[in-house]
Image (cartoon, rainbow, N blue to C red):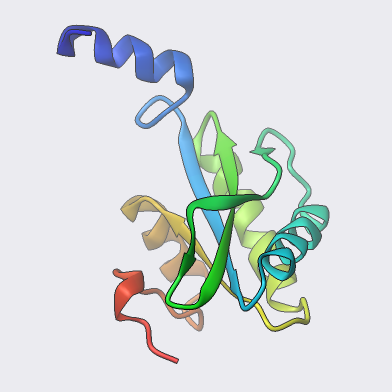
Length: 131
């Protein structure tokens, strides 16, 4: 495909800048624990205009002895995505289990999180996170 066709493909797929995505990542000692955590987190969401997909293993599920899974969140506009995150992230923080989690979103969304959730740690590079 030519680069001229790329915007139409991205628009049709709902990808940025025509749609807005976030990814909830779960990391645990066992894959079923990470998937279960993400499924419980999904149940806490009130999606509205936002689509939450089923949790799935990440393409490279095992990394450094830990199992990783992901849940994709998709919205046509930033506002509904931010509205979901504003209420959903504190609810996820209350879940119990031996799963580390994070949300990956575009830089603009990170600025919104910084404004509304100053106490939440934000990392620019997951590889720099240590135990």
